[in-house]
Amino acid sequence: MEELLKLNFTNIWWAIGAPLFLMILDIITGYYNAWKNNDVSSSAMRDGLGKKCAELCYIAIGFLFKFAFGIDVVMYFMVIYVCYMELVSLAENCDKLGLPVPEKWKEKINNKEDNNNEIK
Image (cartoon, one colour):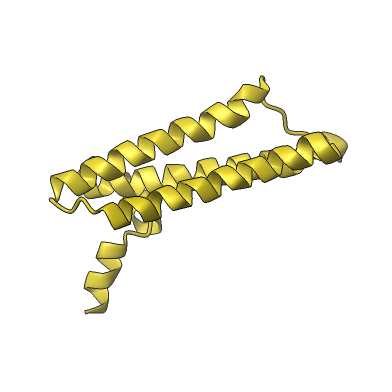
């Protein structure tokens, strides 16, 4: 059972670098999507960057649990959760930009514009 819960990055810097890299890609694709649709908005950017700051806080809490309390699982969960959120957001951005996204993924991702059109 201990082996099952034992996650480990090859280097602790991956726990910082992987989510940051995905966040940067998400910001770039989100901004490009807004620019392409002539929808660049400082308030939308503030909201998005606020969410990124919250995600960084999740990771910081995970590191706190790892180094202060010796609980590695919390850090790994937080890092994997943030990476998952960023990957979903990247898939949404790629879908909006017209890049090929597998049909099964399109069914699962939550594009707000698509949902709003269906409600009307």
